Image 1 (cartoon, helix red, strand yellow):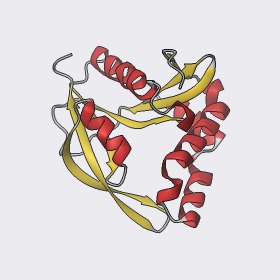
Image 2: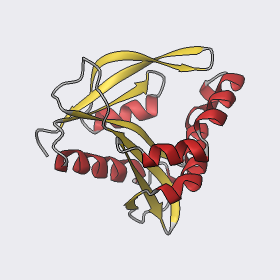
Image 3: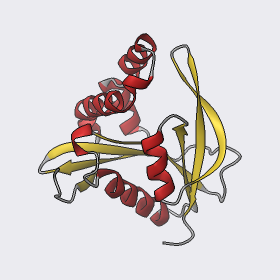
Image 4: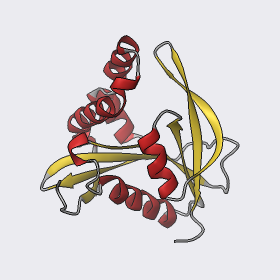
Length: 177
């Protein structure tokens, strides 16, 4: 296990291809075994493209952070400033729409480093809460979010192919450091 502290940097549009590859691999490592193969493959092929990531990177409502360890891309996070579900309080709130690390880096501090960066960005931008949707079957992720002070505020659904999945809506107030 690598114990080097990850370096976190903001992503740019020029990172689209590498970020799409990282996102596809990390998402597959985390969720492929828990989903129908055809539904999963179709979702991954349409969601993790260079063009889609470039568009998201150029979107003024999106902010991406990349985690590197020894110069290698190890994970990433995405914040989105769009509308929040009604159950999210206090407002204004920002969404942590993605936070992933590659499997070889699980347990190496990638998640905490990305989370700290996202929370610091949210606070410095005047947000009072950070929220996310997390699949109810995402035991590892949900345990991490609880440990970081997130609580269940509601629920929503996420469609992956023909599978309608139930997600928790998790919120963390940013009122205190």
